[in-house]
Image (cartoon, rainbow, N blue to C red; front, side, top):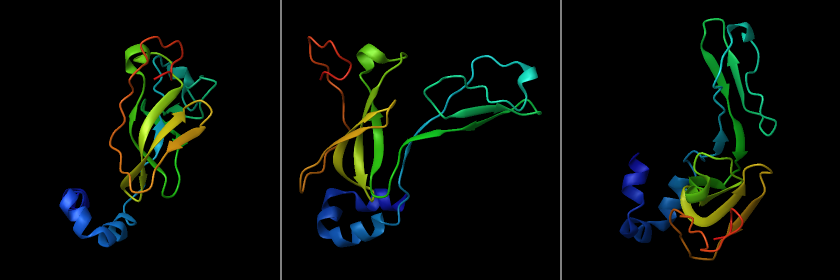
Length: 151
């Protein structure tokens, strides 16, 4: 909390860059996770994984007390390679199956790249330039787009 509000002001970043980097190394690295919530539940399925989707390792297990225990699939993670503010092509894929998400890449909490992630294969593409610090990506589709990621 204190790190975010005190260090990420531009004046503080410029004045205390070495300290910012040192403090940022202590910050936890976010990761992109997929949780799958079952829409139908049969009490006979107690103890079984209720997720039947073939493209995920996420699980949802019905417990004897009728609660459901969720375990996520980590789809993007790595030291000094975090993924924040995920965006998709919402205009065409909101509420529908999608393949690509875009995020702000962080190096110890300092945003220094943009990332494109294939959520099915976990393949990533990165845009990064020296001394460039992008902000949250927003997908803008090409007007004549035929593919999900044409934009």
